[in-house]
Image (tube, rainbow, N blue to C red; front, side, top):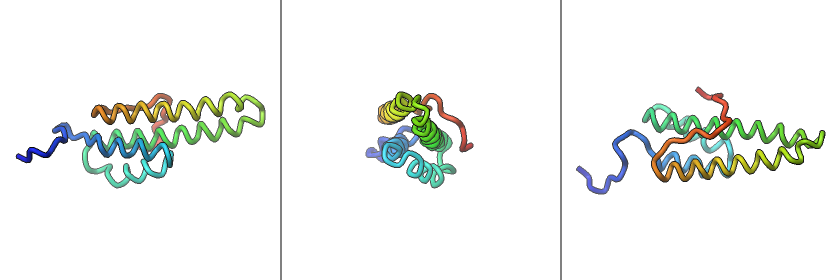
Length: 114
């Protein structure tokens, strides 16, 4: 047995999930979607967590687009910053959960990728 292997035996790669959440801060959809597409057939728990991150990025990108578009009717002046801040807060919560080795599905995430 390799004493340097600190990976838990549960089939959950928390490092890959952590990297995907960090990428979502900068690319929203593209980074997490690429990681999920490459790793979706490896470990079921990791693939499920990566799918949630890709869905999170796409869902909040759609929400942000609609919110920023609604600035035309003035409600977006409040709504757009709130959605943007929520995206970053939920991504940071996901980063903390990934560091602790836990899976996390952010609120209001639409299951687009199945």
